[in-house]
Image (cartoon, rainbow over all chains, first blue to last red; front, side, top):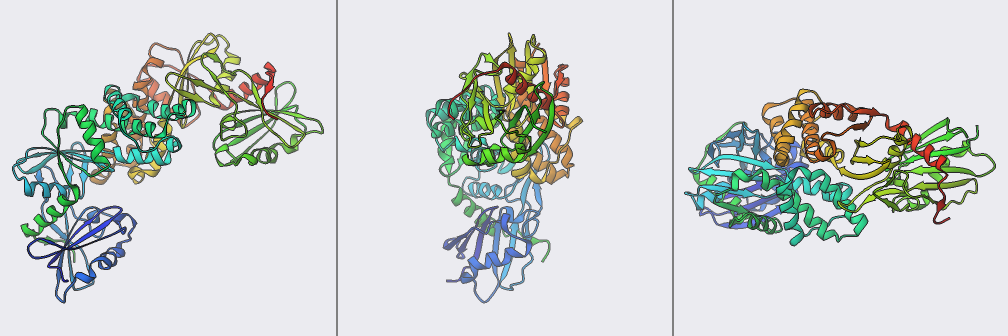
Length: 300
Length: 300
């Protein structure tokens, strides 16, 4: 089968491609672990070809990509578009290719000057959601390594904030003195720690060591201590993100296990989020970029 | 030269030994990187002999050790003494040895039930300080990977709190997305970030990613961003440690570079700490344990 065009979501640790027909339906899908984080400048084109070569015809096939592939250390730097701005940013950037069958264009990231912040990839998921719900005003939350809280108004990304909650959890649970004391968990211990962290966020560094001490002294179950670690980190995030969620309509764009944790946390503060599926949204966003016919610019 | 006895400070990453004369003066000193963290159960005695064998005579030489060597994964588990308790704990624990020239005894750690907390090594430094200043009442701060804030009253350790500030700094500056954005620094950026973190500690996870974004967008100097990282982590600690320092006399037991950072932070909140030298204190503490003639107990 030959694709009419190819949609690509290229993050730090994964590469995902979809072969699309002219009507925007998915003909084929392929995934690899050739994330941007592990590739040298010359490695992007071969990594992409390895996945999509079977879908190429004799002519030129358009590829539209989003994510960290457009970072400074990526295939080509796709400039940031500044908020307030449409989620699709202000144009696509052409990536340099050798194989004449490919024409690769990368979506802009989004930046904010005050406070300084950036995103790459999430804007495409947001564009996908807004393609379905063009009138949506409110907040979209995208949990992950670097969780984004994004205010949407008038169809544009208006303001956003990034929280390193996921990366803190990964570092603390895998590489700190806590690595032998915690395992993934949820439930009552999560909720208690979440509420305690919202009430006294400054106690983080002391409470973290408390998990280790409790494991040593009381032999508390690792899943309970892991649930507390999740709870205290999400409590810190929700305390700081209050201006984003208080009295707001919220869309939670997440898959398990983060979906469950964020939904539980949102329940504690009285939010009833609408849930959106991240993979479906990124594909819808790439489809919207294709339909918008944004002109490619930049190097070849 | 033959030692009358041997003092040992054995932490997670280092082993330090002093050959002592009968009057408590240092005859020789040796250091290796055979920390407890890298040793198997059978590795402790050889690691110690490698350093101290030249100091042994034909008879039995007493060794008094403190630190992580007494942890569950150490040479032998020296039980925790519970607060409130004298800094030297409640006795020494004999470690199993093969070489008849050694008699090795390990100092207790100190534990606290509520909130759960533990220390190993710092109690010996505190004992050393109190050997010189037996009437001291107030707080002793021991900055490090796991910073301790310790309340001293009536010559005993009364209450304490551990803050994972140093470990958070190490993880974030070396292993997180910030590793390319920060370098060690201090000065005005440190003070501003310290004050901001004390005022709004919940913003930690968002401010962390802000360092990365500022580096990307504004090209801010890495030493400035590193100073901010230090400042925000110490601000969080000082906000939570307020009950320890507000209106209290404070001893700061630290060496550079932590000495400078903590002294600057203490200046911001109006504290004028007395400074004590950590290495001198641990040696004084081991000397005090020797003089106290605590009886060894436990396995042989």
